[in-house]
Image (cartoon, rainbow, N blue to C red):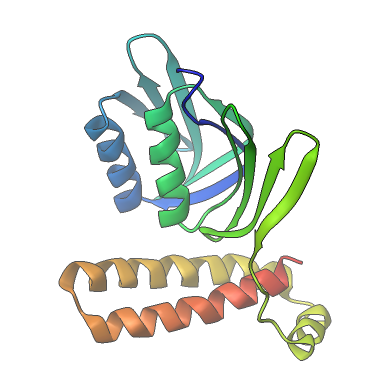
Length: 200
């Protein structure tokens, strides 16, 4: 990778893929000119990604037809892989901290549920927050969430509801069903807000 290009580094990555989105990820990697091989077992999916000079590996834990990519730190040397991975963290509504480095500055993006919630610019000794997403959660909602004793039981169910609604939205977008797209987006906003409260 040339020094003039952006370099991407990932940390605290948590992304859940369904089978359809995982297939789309692998197709996108192939389309970008990378060689992709994978091996699937009952508990794991290993994806080997290579180009002319180096290789990368993504290891996902498997539960049924769901695949979880979880990495504490992942440095991506191939820019094509970096951009595909970034795209699918957004698409799959994942979490990550992405550090984008070039010769002049470093941008640190904190991504939650596929959206940047904070972007920090570091240039020399200067560190500046250039974007921060406003939180629309009310104090009453925070108190109600803190009083809940069933949050540990609710979170796995909530993840399934999110996955189902994302699949519904995906189908609606394919069919260009504007009414269902609107309904699914509204439902996802409600579910996302509840998840943020429970994960505090």
